[in-house]
Image (cartoon, rainbow, N blue to C red):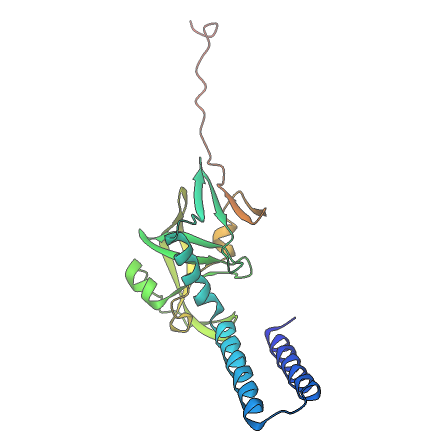
Length: 214
């Protein structure tokens, strides 16, 4: 169900409750009717605000949860585990060129996207190429291509990662599939996002055995 359909359904339920109240009450006053309408108006406006800014609010909720002792991100060897936030998303502590940011892990995003403030703090300079058009939860926006020298989640590090920078992102930074695809694997188990590192290529030097020695 889409957000618009959800809002319509809730308003319909509110109207039905108001009608039932009017039918069951022996006497409904104008004051009572106005109060009910005001309450439902406040509920509707609040829901619209929450849905339009749900990702930003999710980041704040994740930050608050961590301050209260709810550790979301942990490292076991070279594997990173991220618990699902109370808002239903996965938020990772990511370092971009050494600057730490809390980023929304979004497998539906093709490319990693950061705000203009994050780009400035991390020293990421947008290229002079024409802007690209990307789809976000809030509609279509334009963003400038760029590249980050180093992006890391704990021990998981990658270099020269393409990304986009946009003023329309606000304070939201998104870690997209172009980062996840560089890992060996990523999966969700029991509301935990598990990120596995890609295997490093190791050159083996074959030493001569005792029988080979002259």
